[in-house]
Figure (spheres, rainbow, N blue to C red):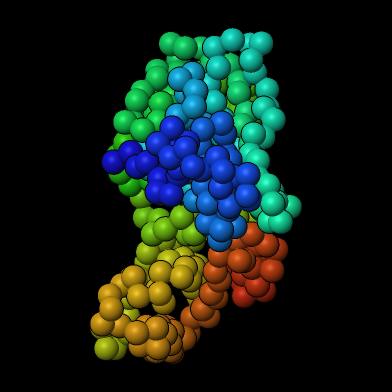
Amino acid sequence: MPLAWPEHLISSAADPSVRRRFDRGECVRLVSGWYVETARWLAAKDFERFVWVLAARSTRSGRFVLCGEAALIAMRLPTFGPPRVISVAESLAGRSGQRADTLSVRGPAAAQALDVWRPVIRRHTHDGAWVGERNTGTFRTAGLLPAVLEVLGGAPLVRALPIVDALTQWDLVAQADVVDAILGLPSAAARKRARLAWESGSSLSGSVGESVSRALFVGAGLEEPKLQLGLVDGRGLIGYVDFCWPGVRVIGEFDGKLKYDGTFGASRSADQVFGQEKARENRLTALGYRVVRWGWADLYRPEQLIRTLRAAGVAQRTDREAA
């Protein structure tokens, strides 16, 4: 299902009064004709701001064809947060380059509203036939395979691997098509980066956080863990762990907020979930495993996580594994 039109965008064509609200500082103008309330802009998460800008700019220009991560987000593929750049496919070389930010706000909150995270627009040339433009219903995008190859060949592994894992799990593209497309990338560096990302993919990844974690392990040269390994004791199955290095009896668990925010059912409180996780961990440690846990904040500052795993005994990859 493609990305839906976001809530809370205000069109001046539908609501002419929004211009007066903008003059009073009550609304942020994303692009001529499209606004969002200043209070909402300030309170929003980065991904919400990203989608508002994406929608406003897409609607404003009929030539706005998304590519790279922006196109994949429009197709509802998971990413490691919103990208800083909205990439747009351009057929004319003279129009390539980063565009000035059109966001504008007035009044006492102007400085604060302009200081928050917001994406920028970068246009770059694509062969129109290669882009294979498609229309998701809300956004015009490059084709799936060209958008994927742009990310695989140009983005860091922490951004590419969540996409590869999703493609693998959902069987969205044929492996042979991706391999052939990687061979056609224009530079050896892009081909090497894309091949590493594609070969690192797994259908066993349980979340974006787990995908990003594995990308960090690869970047640090750590031994490859077993994924979603089921462990048992005398009472039966304990559960499936996110990462396991059986040789050194280390378990890695990525703790996203979903485990504790009620997503898994209103019948389980945060305290109950935490208690069950603690009981599970006790059974794992009784088997002789050391459990290392981390969350989203650790993925943005991974040095301590890597040091902890190494201190726990996780080894570097062998030459054969790293090849």
